[in-house]
Image 1 (tube, rainbow, N blue to C red):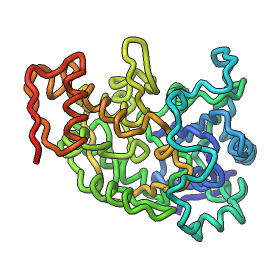
Image 2: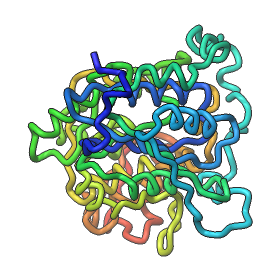
Image 3: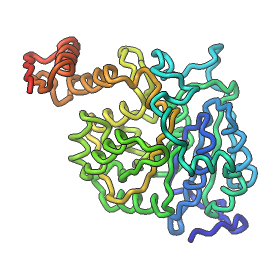
Length: 370
């Protein structure tokens, strides 16, 4: 078991893993996530957890500052000036009209009971002292926040975290998910070191929280994709691995995005892309390889206020346009090739329409109804 004695910490030990954790209104789940990160047993090696608070108003920042105080010399807080803005939020995810009110429980959860574990967390949230008691002695914490406390979005928070990473391996995490096994990062790190032709490693997932049969089916599909070839081929069906399951070589992330996680539109490209989907499509587009260990090492929390269910840009039509862009852009598998679309009804019509409307539309397009 990892030691939790803070007096024995080695403040000079260089971390082997930097964990990127963007945080926005993540209570009461955040303490669980931080605890699971800070108690990872790396067998004599250390990690740094880098949390960028993106303007939280629910006590998330206060929790992080409290745990930092307990960690003493193993924690540091950076206040970033940031670009001046008068907008209450510059979060790109909020540009498109929301599909549901993100400040309320999603309507699809109305008939479901709150899981027992969530009730317990609400009634007695984990305290900073609870989390501190589980921290490995050599793990460190960095807390980053913008001075103006504006909500800038996941891409800005992750890019800020990456700019403070000092380790050769980068893990990504979401602030409401779980890595309950203390050997999760050790298993993934060993797999990445063993497979020298892999640029990243992921893991199998299970859903936690509310029961969502559709998401269970999605995870079952993801969990079948283990080899780099299977993950690469699956990218146009859906995201083949949750981005928070993955660990990367730092140099690989630079090759994909230069350390800047794209979020939303950008000059010359009006596609409104979510961070995770765009990252994986760019990752495979530039020839990167990601394998997956067969162990279930992440709990993907399902809850009524997940942005997956509320943000407008996560609609099926928008996600389809993003996939089509990566299919048809120069270097994409369908660039300058004839394309057949096999489907039925409205799905067939919409795929054919969007393919034909793209600036690199295929020279020949055939619709096959089946």
